[in-house]
Amino acid sequence: MKVGILGTGEVGRTLGAGFAGLGHEVRIGSREPGSDKLRAWAEKTGARASSGTFAEAASFAEVAVLATLWTGTESALRLAGPENLAGKVVIDATNPLLFDPAGRRSWPWATAIRVGSRCSVGCRTRASSRRSTPSAMRTW
Ligand SMILES: NC(=O)c1ccc[n+]([C@@H]2O[C@H](COP(=O)([O-])OP(=O)(O)OC[C@H]3O[C@@H](n4cnc5c(N)ncnc54)[C@H](OP(=O)(O)O)[C@@H]3O)[C@@H](O)[C@H]2O)c1
Image (cartoon, rainbow, N blue to C red; front, side, top):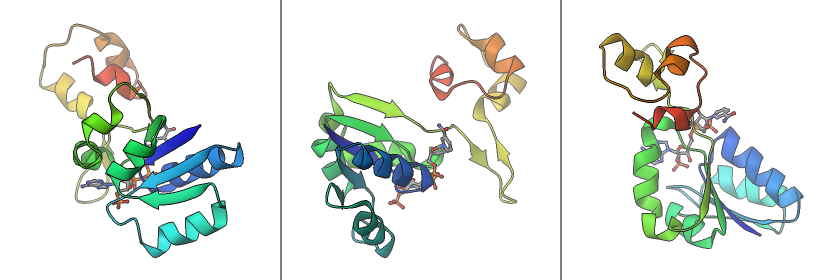
């Protein structure tokens, strides 16, 4: 299977190496596909691994993995090209985390709950657990 990984952090590189180790072809996507980091990753991972732009990884993919920084995710998806992902399985590993200037993290929906945003599905889960899945958040 051809796996396109969108995201070159620890998560993307680890999942990419895992898929390649299982015999799948992997292309990892980045704004800087020729970076030293990705060259080293591809060399270490082996012949089934390659890097490209977000769009190249998305169009290569039969199955895609989304592993981008939350605040860069929309931009990464735009760069990937929604048409390159249409009809494909996309495994979303992102966590919707925000960071303040001091590096402390917060969860966007915690703010939404505090300011009394309306919610029809999954509010109780989110209110009682800060570890709800990102997909739950998308019911807002
Ligand atoms: N599901 C889980 O168990 C689990 C565990 C840990 C983390 N996570 C989540 O997995 C995701 C990846 O985490 P990570 O630590 O591996 O990596 P990360 O540092 O959060 O994200 C790195 C990737 O985000 C891209 N990116 C950052 N800003 C961007 C922007 N403005 N436009 C386009 N792309 C941008 C980077 O692109 P470039 O390559 O071009 O720099 C890079 O590919 C995060 O959402 C994290 O919260 C999930």
